[in-house]
Image 1 (tube, one colour):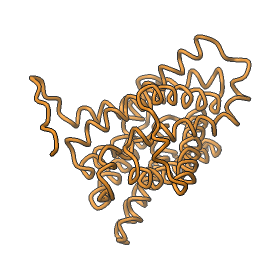
Image 2: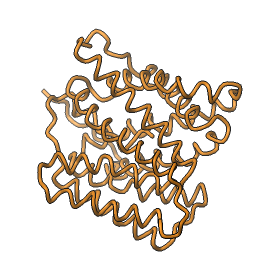
Image 3: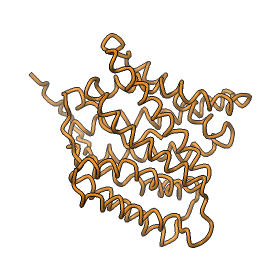
Image 4: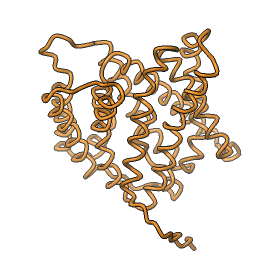
Length: 301
């Protein structure tokens, strides 16, 4: 028999927690730029994943006895996708504005939602978002950073794979249990490229900064998202998550002083609109009750 929901004197609307989760992720991304200057993108990704792994291992014990032999390839692949997404995303924001990076990366999950719908009309949403990305990058100005865009596309690809694999893990384990296994794997994966960059630059200050960034993302957002999905449908949650690129622009403006042009603002509006439209038919019925505790996060970049 399910437990009755706990009543408190102060009811927090679920959408506010979802917004807080997105702001936390983008604040972590914006603040990561300072650490990138010290230990590099891969070094920052490795430190954040390592600290995140310690946090999740401290919160929950990985369900190692529940792992089947067939789960191992998926867990390893999900860890690799998470590490790839993080390294590529941080490499991108080291070269192009945060809002632009988030918008390009957002094409990954947006394409997944459209393709999974099995409706050709849904492909119009990624196409619309792509137009928005073109407006954001303003290629006609001749100042396109190809490497930055390439890393953002790679991050988007990693995010798309991450979503598909997370759903498979979510069908077997609860959300936080899945993260307690995949985040440590991601930390190991990123170590191959992160340790060489960070070596010789580690200090108490750097480790403390990495811990703070890991709390902002992925620890705090995931906890908030789990609370949100207990009170909000997956479709409503996914539609709200379409605001992620807009929050990327906002944090880029407030923290990094990256001022978008009117054309770029129009571009981000197109991306947000496309993301909200794609979610209308992108819902998925979880295969087990376990996946109710395992949302597809807004992103762990």
